[in-house]
Length: 353
Image (cartoon, rainbow, N blue to C red; front, side, top):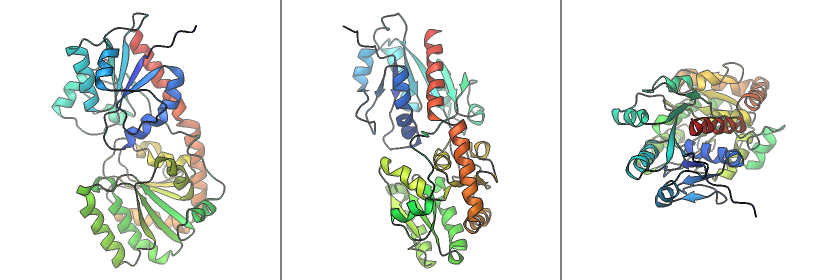
């Protein structure tokens, strides 16, 4: 009788909202689970076919080392998860090593710096993110995209029409509707450009939380005053399984955040064959090849955004070529499978050290 494998890796999942970090965790799981037996601390938004743990179950599991004498590894992305790991390790004597993965590009608080200083290893997703850390990262592993999930199609117009949206040229912005995501920048640019480009439609796909409703209402008022309410559409939060088809339908994915950690939506769009229009926040200015995969504009710059949006709508063959360039680039360089393999390789190094 074959002995059941021991759980070697526990992945933190303390987020209450579905975020980019949640999406990354889900996409990595399918590959990581084949490389190392794992469990997830917290069940929010996790697929039912993966083992999840309560905090008590986590503490009980990690009381002892693995049968080979090695510690388990706890992989974290959030402050809450670092705290969970440190409490387990130092108050309950859990036999774990803690790894923190950071995409944030901001000056951390003193408390966060202290938490990071207690980690056994630090992974960053870019050199920029690493420059904000109190300790030099052990390794840089860029985020990848599930290139089996986000795939290009030959006929974007056909997909767009099947989705039931007006026009023949789709522009999408994906993520929570809030000021930091720069949705208003796209709206202001659209008001300048769309009246002369009747075949273009914008979809805004993402949740609006209560504290951001006033921000959304201001945009809705502007859209109505410009008589664009039939061509600038708020879709709300859509099921995770619907997203690939939406990415396949749009010809351009916009991502105009005022600040950003990593930001996967432009890469998901590129993987799906869309040209991109991004701000210079986060790693986008490093990853997006300006003029090849789409365009990178200055942060919070409506005029530049409108100018590039107009170009992409009015030069559709070039936009199509940019989308094709982007898909090839992502599929060759930014596979989530490669990311998962690199993470597991590093986990084994830290565990065995």
